[in-house]
Figure 1 (cartoon, one colour):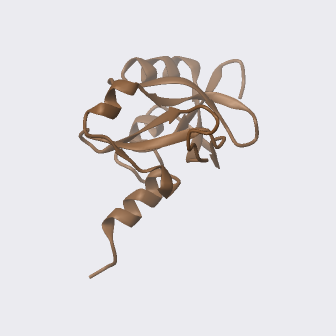
Figure 2 (cartoon, rainbow, N blue to C red):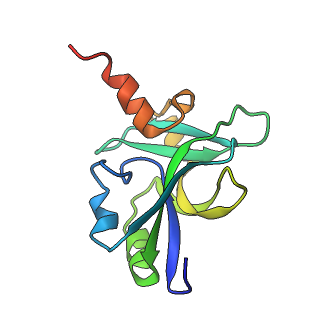
Length: 138
């Protein structure tokens, strides 16, 4: 990261190969790495279109897990425009990564969890959830 760029952790529809990834690549975003969060998060499938997950940090002992994320780099001007366009119940805050560092990243407002959200933490990430939800090939 430079003084003219920012890092952003994405967890769902903005991951490589997912329907909103173009919002990063169209802004010149560059994938830095795939990693996991610290084991203090829960992941929920939200009732949104397109489908998206919500990442929520929890206190120690509340069943958190390490969740797969991608860390992207965006120029600061592009980062600001990207964040300004994020619809509720999602937002950007600080996400603690498995290596102890923290970066800006997608988080979910708790209100979304009472509106048909499904806890998918046990899958370990959005891609695994989508794979598991698809079931075996026919």
